[in-house]
Image 1 (cartoon, one colour):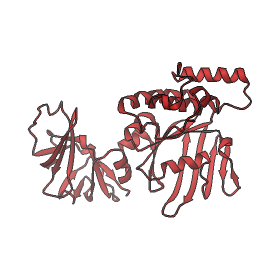
Image 2 (cartoon, helix red, strand yellow):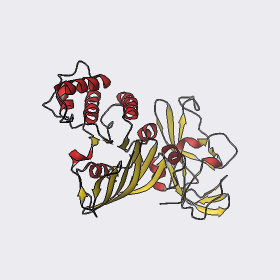
Image 3 (cartoon, one colour):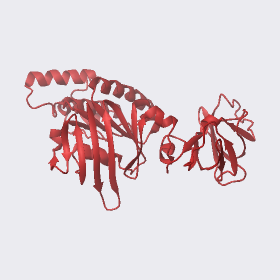
Image 4 (cartoon, one colour):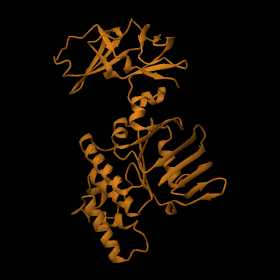
Length: 348
């Protein structure tokens, strides 16, 4: 099974123009706020009508502008988990789930299916509670149970963890992962959280200003983002313009510094990315002179901002407290960079 999407939708100051395929499993859509992630889901669900294009789910055409096909949401068999869960406020947990069960179910079938979903999502004892009586995590589980009660062929999840605290979020991510694995169809998870996408999604689409700028296997995309946008969204803190000097040499005007690479420098190189944790206070390759300008302390990490050769663009270094064990660590005046840790960026 697969979900194929190729759509365009124009607004006054924004144009959505996306094309991708979501196979079985979880496909992530990663992008900054306002890039068109949620609009894409609404088009797939039938809430918003594209100007043109085509949406196909398991050989069933949901939308085709040329053929005049535009199935209403209730006929698309697409489950949509909204960011605020959109539970019916005056209905109990049990009633929320039963509201979307197939109409041909008799009373016994409705009771059996509801009981199975309540047990599967650990909602026993909450059957008669209304949404305002539930925690954020309980509301999400009810919303997931209701979504799957409709027996969708695909599921869409719009920032489902954004309102939850960190401890609850990680537990529910594991639950969602196992639930969707049992479900078995294509699922799309929209998020601006790169860690969430990396944990849950086998494949990822990166969006910027209404367009797909990168797509592929999630781990490969994080390891080699190739574009500036993908590098930023996958957490690359140091992004610099770069000029080819030789087959294995690049000049960084932002730092007035030259680095050596193990890979052959492509002719179309526009810049490089360096992740903040890839620098080292000890090494042999690519020494970089640094001068501390600012620092921040997290429970388990230090984050430092350095100046390189008195240039305006800073160098960011994130390092574990195990590496710098002192509360006031002695900071190096030179950082080193493995030549394999330099990410070539050939697209804007």
